[in-house]
Image (cartoon, rainbow, N blue to C red; front, side):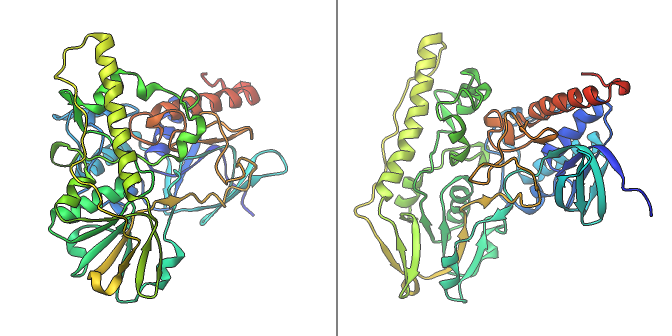
Length: 422
């Protein structure tokens, strides 16, 4: 019987988080393997619609040793450009990756190492880095089963373009980043859109007082704020992302303007009974909350400009261009002409394979900048792992460097003869 392979570090996930981790492990000269159940960075090809683009400027793309160096730092890469960017990073890192191999279980072995079971055999490891992100299982509510079979249903990860959908109106459920952008994509294509607006989805301006809002926020230090410094602390990890777009050079997404142009806005979708979709009351409140966030961010920029004396165009306040006349709690499905539904209510994490005590009562990993209390188990690439950019190209590399630094320290303490640089 052949011996079970052993690695100093097993990395689970071959996206930008796993590749960033491999980059820093290579800098430390640490033996490791990366397991990826699909292909490296495949998510950017398979889970994005055709018109997808970044919502932050290209200059924020700063993967380890692979900062954006193209001709348009203030523009927003579209899907094909993003894919090319991350694929070039993968080639540069050249990780010891095993593609098409899923990790199915990780547990602590009797000798203190980790026993790793995969779809292609077993191995052991001194350290495990979970770099598979937090968006695993598409969320589709059970009420979807009640809809007529004639209605085409897709999750946002399956949506590609308006031509993919049958004739008729499209119900988009959810107005976070994906929902708002997909609703816009359909609206611009001339499709009738019925949008079930999320209760607490915030929005922000694309440009304000002569600059991209992201640039202002960077100057204000927002992207360096750690989760420990944020007013919401760890609660910020549950926040919905602000909706805005980088499409066509970048612009606001204003659901009120879409409504004035014919998009139908409703509150949170609750059920389907007796041939009618039912919605929670509160559309006015949801739109007002989104605008309050929009104006609040701009007001913070106003304060920064006043305090620093930066020259900038005059301040302004967004005023609603449309408001609901009344709440509409129901919509007759047959009369609406809806032929398809796009579910844009996110993903749930699935860490069932990680059989170790690193989760809280809600099933979320417990860590401090990716380092857990279970010695040898780390996370990289989760939203707000440390800062706003932890799950993005902007800061995932710095988090990976931090985690690998802690790994190197632990391995050096256990195996001083290896001479690991720390």
